[in-house]
Image (tube, rainbow, N blue to C red; front, side, top):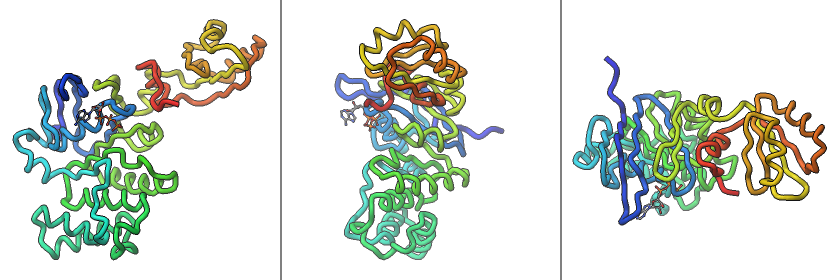
Length: 310
Ligand SMILES: Nc1ncnc2c1ncn2[C@@H]1O[C@H](COP(=O)(O)OP(=O)(O)OP(=O)(O)O)[C@@H](O)[C@H]1O
């Protein structure tokens, strides 16, 4: 028999006063999946995570987490979830080890078991050498890894990671990613939010692309790119004139054109052929860049806006 979904939302709604921030979304997350909510700031990703985590009550629709209703079975839901919120919320006066053991004790785990799990998780997150150091002395990346370790202390069935790498430098980000790959390979069900398309593309089995409180598309990253964008895109910047004025001249060159304030994007299966045709047109072009289509292009196609505003 197939397993029931780890999370199932049907017509999920959250309103704050008169503003609707989650607007009737439907999704299912299956056991063992690594799913990402990808969307710009303010899309409603964190709010959705908080409803799953039983921190915020929904205003409408249905939500089942591990078969339980987070609004009525909050403590039972929370005991089976691991949560890594956007802010680390660590006790900076305590050591890394103490942060984990203290948290484990909240779940009623014995002192000996708490210590043993904490040491194991510090090792898993490559933090063993900082076990006795106060959190105040750790870098941002180390704190994030410690927060993820903390989320795993109760051996959760589902892990929620709200923007796990926001604010980290590239090196720290890659260290976090490395640990998230390990988590994915261990078969843990993970739900992550991000507005980084590279993070979404590299880590997630499946994405729910969200904008203004609704899911605008879902699927595996490559599947979404294949469905909504041609395989290549040519970014054309012009020496003078507004892109909108030039767009008509570029229209027939590819399968579709998209006009942004500072450039025109021409989508095509063969970007080099478009670039060659452009040259023959003799336009006053300042730069031409041919690249593979990305999730950014998917988002632009679906919403008419960039995922990360320049
Ligand atoms: N407690 C609250 N009261 C009122 N409005 C809220 C509250 N929490 C969130 N919002 C609003 O809901 C909208 C969605 O916020 P949310 O944090 O879910 O978005 P997000 O997609 O996670 O974006 P971010 O990446 O910035 O966290 C925003 O406009 C935000 O201002």
